Image (cartoon, rainbow, N blue to C red):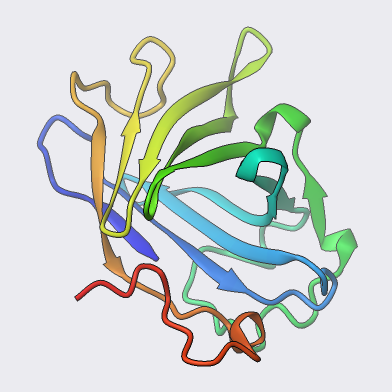
Length: 182
């Protein structure tokens, strides 16, 4: 899914996407590609490994590209652009950089997203985040945020939805994506 800030004038312009990709080097993992830019400057380009743990808590383990010149923030062809990514092309981030979410209602998830590109007192800055089918709200802690502070959360609307890759839904008769919103 792609998201963009609603254009509140006190906010920086944040554009990004979370997109399901298949990485042959990680054949048994569910993988997302996360791209984010702030004021038209690429801020983050990562592979996220998605896992569900105890009590239904979802974790996303970020991995950076070791050669940032090889993979830049562009439109990727998810069917082939990651075929040659090897484990050596990816480096895991620090353990405290992992994202955690829990479901609080139907298609509503709350959690934290650490910003490991911005370290304060030796620790990444955490953002409180709420996802639903149509929006993502992110609360920034003003004294530590890279983005412009605001008394209200950054609220982004999802502009584009990407389909799940076929291997995820194979064998599921009449599968409907949970956010198949009208």
